[in-house]
Image (cartoon, rainbow, N blue to C red; front, side, top):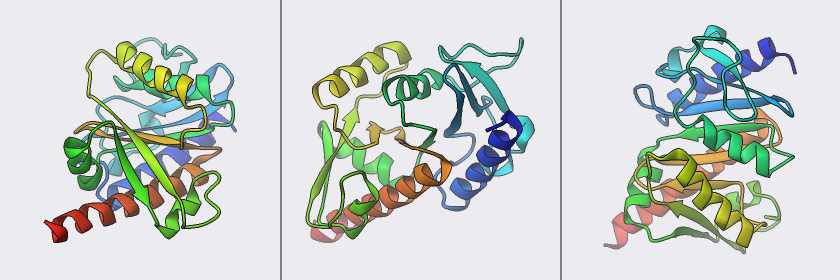
Length: 203
């Protein structure tokens, strides 16, 4: 994929996420892997619903900007961590929905999703009759330290679902390409919203 095509796809994903209410203000970030050592990612401080291709930049595999003076998201290293760990990851989405924010503030180390038809959107989810534990990590402004905690969990659970939540902050989801990542994000956000509603009505 060319940088231009990736930038257009990222801008379109930003508009989609904004329409769903998942990236308020300048929240969230989006990326596509261009090559083994290059990533297209949203520039820092951009409203995702108003983005154009000009609001996307390129970084190397360590998160360093390809162009002098450009500034990517503060959380670029979390995108790099996903691409470094998962060779099949081609796109990463990070959003701040009401459901993932509220649920993660209440959760322990994971949020269990069980019995939902949309669990089929995750790898290995051939039936609704299963459960997924979505990891929840404490928010940390030290991004390298946060990535170390994520890597430690992945080392212990290499078959973990393609997603995690940062407490009170937002969700990260990835897929082979932008369509796959968006499908998983939409499925996950629907299940989280259901989980939130069930909790509200049972209390």
